[in-house]
Length: 212
Image (cartoon, rainbow, N blue to C red):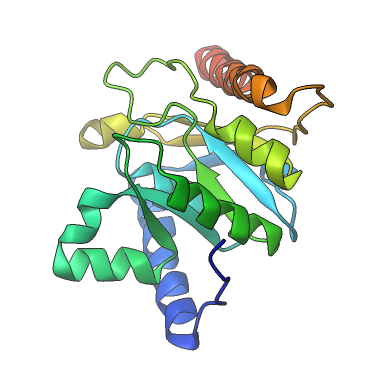
């Protein structure tokens, strides 16, 4: 398992700077509304499991809370010299989406075992329709292996930035992987449960918006 190296001073500065820029842009241009922020633990390991609509989702989740986060990013993004360097400095690490990337998941386990916050998209890729799809077992695997709580996160309208739709992010109550005789068989079941909770948050935000 890879060693955990705390962010250096310049990385913290760059992270806070970029997060601040995103936060103000999301607030003033897209009228960002965040609910349930209190459900995210202030310290200690936590998995933030979110639906995935656009490339804006990682900074959107990160700018909605006060904690520094770490997140998976498809390895293709690291091939661009300047952009790849920047996202690595702000806590992104590469994952090979076309295969079961053991190295990326070991990296996530290391971060969680050192009390960090990791963002994971249970569907494994962006939704092309805006609908919440089927979960992959990764969230369940990390939850069982690290015993970290999972906070379901739902994002609305990040796929409609050009339409300047109001951005909404909702954080649900923490979930813990239940005891299981065979944890490997339970990975998928718990991942499905997490994504179902994300769908519940989505429905609630939709209904709340309609009643305003």
